[in-house]
Image 1 (cartoon, helix red, strand yellow):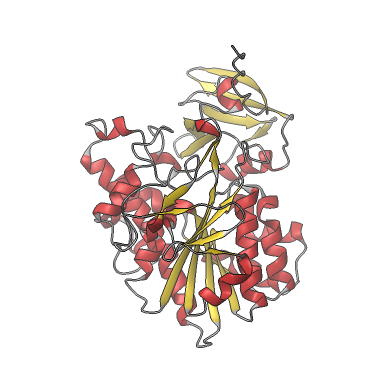
Image 2 (cartoon, one colour; image 1 turned 135 degrees about the horizontal axis):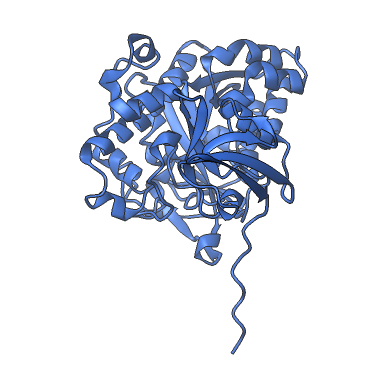
Length: 416
């Protein structure tokens, strides 16, 4: 999956109801970020790493030498890309082989999961025990098998894993009411300063949405709250990474933080927030697919040099390996039923008739008490399987049979 296809930033789900897939600007070609690189482009090379400052093409094994002075490395992933996670594993493996003392910060976990992460690394838990005790389905919505290789390598090599996230309820609260409305206990989970009022950061944020939404359709107050929510998320990631880096005096120590690409691109997310509190050297690396299916599989030859310190060219994946629900929900306290607030137009759920505003009652006959129950229901699904949803629509209970099938490409035009 290309960065262009995964371009939407990791905005809290309840803020995405009006977002669409067509971006106002190409997020790979924005003249923002490092002033020395933002007006330049660099080649994107398949299965190679481009150092954007010099334009040099590197092998993965070359990275440790280039990162010898770096103490925090932010790596941007596409959550449902097998190739993107292979890049993350390769980065961790090469740094470990080079003798760096690696620890890995994880977007998918908050601090409360640390005991389970420690026991996993110590070899005390089976995979099933770890997934249950760490709350994988509670904290993360993506298939474990995308990440399994990273976790197994960390366990087998004694690499410390730690969560850098905060509860989604905190970020959603900022999106609804702003940073100043957080409860004291929530505010204590963030650094003292969250830098959200930045023109380039806002431009990157805007590039994730349909351009029409920013021509009078989205009030400034709402936009600012959404930007604050994204910045709060980035601040938590950066702050927790800094604390981990500062906890070690080993000059060979390096913290590798695995985050969604939107939190890493152009150094405007987690890295920018981290630099408010950390004087050590940091760097960014983003994997980018070299073609874009949405544009007829055209080859992406170059990206903006300021996109990251290092860009790694990977193959395009037309579809995720594992099916996803294809919709987002929010919890409605008054009746305890998840409300559908977004449906991917290209998803199986959309083709089966799921609508925004539906209240989700059951998945495969099991009550949907929370998001964890929905994720658990989809965890073992594969393409070709089916799922049966029961929704409350108005005053009726409506059953929906959803065959989990990938979208068929447009038919080829006959040769003239």
